[in-house]
Length: 454
Image 1 (tube, rainbow, N blue to C red):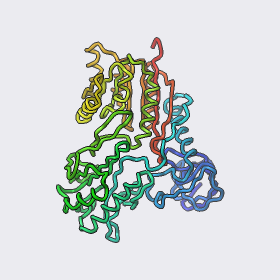
Image 2: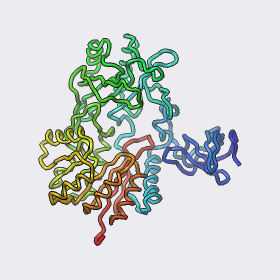
Image 3: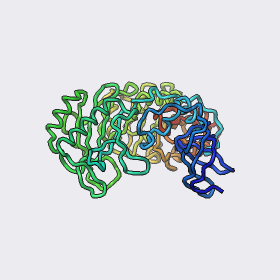
Image 4: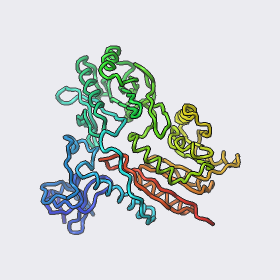
């Protein structure tokens, strides 16, 4: 029986969805972070439970051929890039296996997926980043990321996943906060002003937004801040305060105050021009999103005569990107502000064959039924928790020919696909798409086709 502090020899045979390596010792699974399939290790046991244990690497006996040099100085402490220690080829292979296994084990769907689509870039691809701001034990302003399962800030101005100039902006703001002795937030006392820094970049337009999340209503020396920051970084077209005085872990508050320039920045995705506020949802990997949406359109098999129902449509990006290939796009979203954004995006791009309903899926189904309208294609892009039961039931009532589901969680996607299979559909195409290189996240696209006679 394993005991805490035991030293064992272990060979890593698999990687979990949390990116920990796993091997077996006398029939017991042992999870070891920061390892690769094929690593032969000496492992120290740090925690033992009934049927599994956790360990840390004490000594590398023989490294896996999947291993790659980890050039990030804080990746072990930060935890965001949990797959940085292996090659990108190995990462894609692992992510494809996760999707395949989820559909087999959770969905009961033994479908061989198409080869995973890699990200167009493995570094510098993120167009948005949120950084907590705190004071360290030495009294210095620290900007970086929270360590896993904690609110301890790991300082990191130049994250490899963000564009290099994000780090230059952070460095400048860090110096400004120190020079002008502007207070930063303390979670224990709920005092201090600057809580987070939020940066957003329009990759196609070059427009950049800087947003300070503050525990207050104003920024000391705001005019100096704006003048000097825009002189140093002319690509900045929007500087804002986001007001968040609440005792909460939620980063952004509901109110934004423009200090300089526009309330939004613009970008272009799949030929659609979008305006992005600090509160707007937008895929963080723009080039990857274009690949993802292109695959979804291909799976949908658009003919130019289709009625496309876009559920969980948000600001309408996916549906609008397909508007030129269908007869009509109907977007459905429960968040009223997002529906308004979708309508504005359609108008801004001169798209006449799209309309948007502020409703849930069941309500939208009833509306369309009253109109005598039946969508033949349904597009789904639910949150990580997957589709609500009412959404899947409404799809069954509408009986579209094809359902295309995009998901950032292949486990819930597999569960929802299995429910659709019970309602007369079969999974006919499946593909993993890497949108978040070096992390343990992967997107999934699955095509559900209606079975004749069901």
